[in-house]
Length: 360
Image 1 (cartoon, one colour):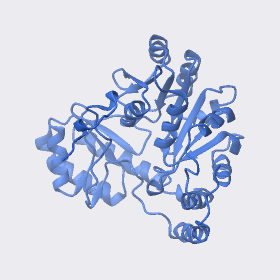
Image 2 (cartoon, helix red, strand yellow):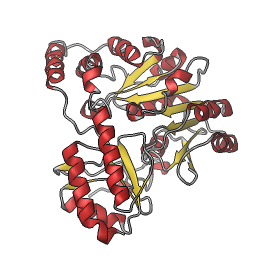
Image 3 (cartoon, one colour):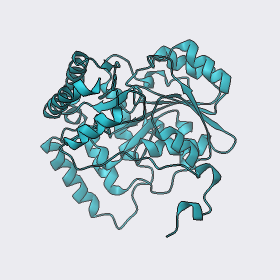
Image 4 (cartoon, helix red, strand yellow):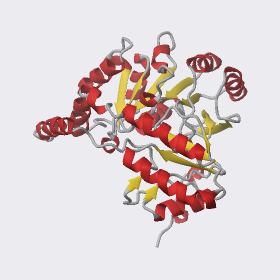
């Protein structure tokens, strides 16, 4: 049988492993930070009707510019944005990939602050962009001096700040983001995949005016409970959107994806109605874990990074055997847990309470 080593793979991909989290069919799946609540039935009905109508026209290519969707996303984000400042693609990963295709590549570099989203180095490798990972300080929070120093030391072509940060949950202030922008001559991406869960920090979208190299990435996979549709989007200067047109594949967003997403954005209120409950379950889980003696990092997202496990891999396996899936990210002593429904949170707390005497 042919293996990867038998193929003329690019040198910078040799030895790499594809992104992948377990997709076990378990009763409680809390490992990839989805919104585990189902869509409201009235929204399901409207999306189904929109899809039926869209199917009637699939003999033709979809709107290449996704104009109606971008108009809807601009309205959702507010801040005076127009459709010309919005871009959409198949998940925020594709949005970020297109940014790296346009502004990264051979001889250019991507910097971010680790631990952070594990796709960043993979996206860099896929576009032949040098990856620079700068380890976050203890506690994971970024301040102005630290960020400015890192950017000036490395002069990256692209910098990504994920806020709230995956997997730590740490939020980054507008002051730090503005300082990062001023410290670089390159592109600054603020990845706000979990922004709707952060009740304390304003979106970096407010910083866009006068900053043409600032890009704010969002997704419908998290708070919108729309992970299966694969819809990510970006707000930036209109010139950035023009740059992304140079690298996007034609008709990259299917008519069905556009129809579903347009309808979902129209129902933003009910689609986001579970955000408050998710925050409550996150905080409930944090209190329970602290009482069990674990270290819980502050989180503005829909998940917690939890430390204090003597053997994280063993705990992960023990929970998996109990039908509960969380995430082992190979951070020493730590595991990451998504805040789910009340019932899912109850099951997770009960299992960890049972395992705690052997975890410590």
